[in-house]
Image (cartoon, rainbow, N blue to C red):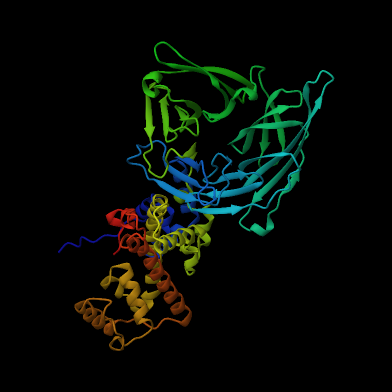
Length: 570
């Protein structure tokens, strides 16, 4: 008889794991010691980072035009930027923890938000936030922040510029700018929060920062006006923290809507107000791109065919190039109702296509900003160093949902809605609950895997008998460390026939009692899973509660969250 069994080659294990998102890697670390060893390996982490960076995303950052419960609301929605939206992996997050006003270009999956003097670093993929220390700003001064990555020391940095512009009135009554008092500070984003603080640095050039920043190749670039009203580009070396000035042609005036963009691996300038639609429907515009070898700026004319036919009267701005530089990309002016569309033009074939993002969470009440080449850290995996040091013995390293402010806020809203029976905020509640319920399902899977890993020492066969995660959790909690299952009442947890199978199997198992500390962690994880299961059912309970309104308003049955059938675990 031929033995048809075989062992999967190690390189195939690596290839399979490298294609998985971070959350799946976390779960798989508990399945196999071999897989855990691969995932923690230095080579795998490097390869995983590189591969993930080759599949960048379009990131939409949407802010509400109004405050819900007096809290600013931000939504993050991303898809792979060169795949049809129907085939692309969607990542989504809603938060009330970030300032609204200024959003940086994503850098290695992180985003810097600024609101007045508040700065928050956000990781949309892992739903993590870090509030930076408040920075002191002189009265009447303005503040701009820029975000980059130190590729030498492997740390992120925030450059903060405070500027106080002083004016003088002439004898003729005209007002002229005299000078700007500019201060520069840098914050290094370290894993040890307590060791980081703002540090003042010197810049020998007098200017006012006037544009958003562009991070490229270890340098931050941003447009500025000198004290003699000349437009220049400031260059900041994120590693050495040195400034330099790049002179510009006289035609560039940052007061007239010139913007910095990434163009074919370098930096370029585009005047967003200066373009023509020809009679044939093509769009023609010019860009200035920096020739780093020659040290000058060169003009290039770009013509986009069938523009009028494709976009009609929608207002799109040139955002630069992506990939190898052959795809030109355009996005709507943020704040328009077309904020969930992007246009791609292949410079070689001149093929123009529109990329529509269909997503109910982003609607016309949102101001939408579009970013390209976003490397989602749910794909990359934190900053990847965490996988090496990840302690699977601590559930808090994996299960974070219940301790998040978002979880607490939404559950509180559901409970208040059940208590009051009101209908006014149910549409918003549906959106929140739909997203949270998916997260709860995923969290239950994580906790279930943690419990199985611990309980295998006691009763390894149980996981092959009881497949449903919550049923398994209930049985583990009921059995605990008891070796004689005739003393354990499993009635009501499992069907009678299954109770018999479990009891017989337990009598022949070679398992041992769990050490006290392991048992405590296991039972604590069981309680956490059951709490998640209870929270998951609250919106369903709401659907069974009649409205307390006597005016014939809708019952809460109409706001039952819609969850894909394959995600239900009841």
